[in-house]
Amino acid sequence: MATEAKQHYDILVNGGGIVGAAFVCELLHILKNPSSSSLKIAILDPRPPPSLDECLSRTSPDLRVYALAPATVALLKKIGAWKYVEKRSQPYNAMHVWESEGPGMVEFASDEVSIHYHTHTHTHTLHT
Image (tube, rainbow, N blue to C red; front, side):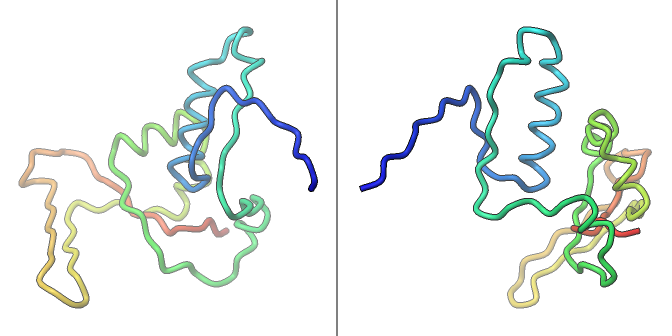
């Protein structure tokens, strides 16, 4: 039986997708002081992350789309990711989402809820 060396981490993040990765970036931004440089952080995800070059070299569109709230856009700007996301984002002020099967439906209109700024949609993967 092989023995595995135990590893110690101060913080474990479950999921390396957009939420987990943004969380770690923001955490590092908050903790940017000399005492936090010794923190060991691990992101647990069953799949390895694609490289930025792999994301930017995609030639076919990814049909998965995120709706980004204004607070999310602010966070992406703060952690330095918005410059990659902005080119593939589109502002919107209304949305209607429904299930392909079943009665589920959600509608959103910014003027109906007194939001005077646009939210954005963005494709799942980055393209040039």
